[in-house]
Length: 395
Image 1 (cartoon, rainbow, N blue to C red):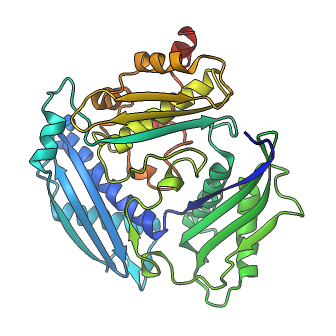
Image 2 (spheres, rainbow, N blue to C red; image 1 turned 60 degrees about the vertical axis):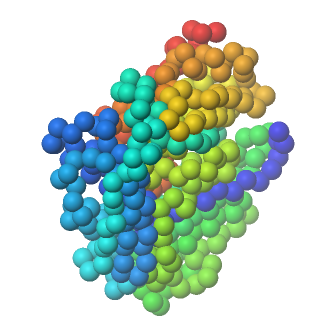
Image 3 (cartoon, rainbow, N blue to C red; image 1 turned 90 degrees about the vertical axis):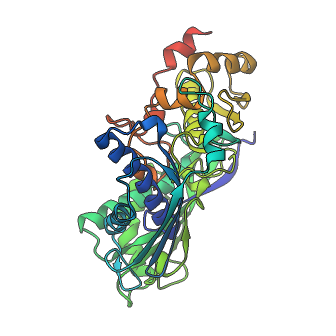
């Protein structure tokens, strides 16, 4: 691998049109698990594949579901409005209270259901075919690629300031991009920083917005990463008042690189949001990240990529592939076998191990599914490093 190079990753805020749709789709998934728990519906039988489209004052929610009958269109509409309100949209072109919300959810296909259910509760099959990748590296304490991690952090700090009321001029829609210079394979500085953020005042210029956002950028990045040579691009097109779904149509699943590793690792192509954990696009990607992070945390490598592959209706993965990128301290072929021993990689095994039958998904919809702290109620459980001892012991 080259020792000196530039690498760039981007992030988008919770108010980006695509992220609004991801959030609404994941709110639907959470609603099924939450109401299911309240009504005694078996969580292992819940199925959700929900897509959302958002444009000027209109939201369309479509897909296939199976779950508690208490989830009516009115419940879905209520959750969508609550999500839009929480994000902060109270604008003429997109308002949580006045947007037209249409629900087109229907029962899951029996042909698909039989592929997942036919093996019985013990060994349910994967909800679809596909390939999933997990990745971890030592560039940040969270074992995430630095450009993406810091691009996320910039927008999270700005969003916190907006929600608190500290920065009243910032709107919900924003994007960031960080170009990082690497020396000897390690990130050392930011050479270019891009932030585009929606704002409320028509008269504000790019220079005005820079005064607002620069402190959050400096807070987000490691000390010494910003220098006099760093090039700034703050609202480079100028005015950014019309934003969100009013400015650009949004759709679930269009920010898969933002959601994962910022382009630093391969991606199998499947989106996460709006899918229950029988869909291996989501759950197996979480499992692959979990395994990769534990491999690096166990000091078996400084960098790890793991691929899992599945076929619809088949319980166990068709293949497990490990690439330690020349940084490994163990044999990659042996490690592939060990990973299959330390974790049951069937859909049911993943759901059990990572405690995924819970309403934990709406919080994943913005600022990345990976590199976040595990939460007490099971959220971000795939970020735990509780396999370290088992992995070390295998070698």
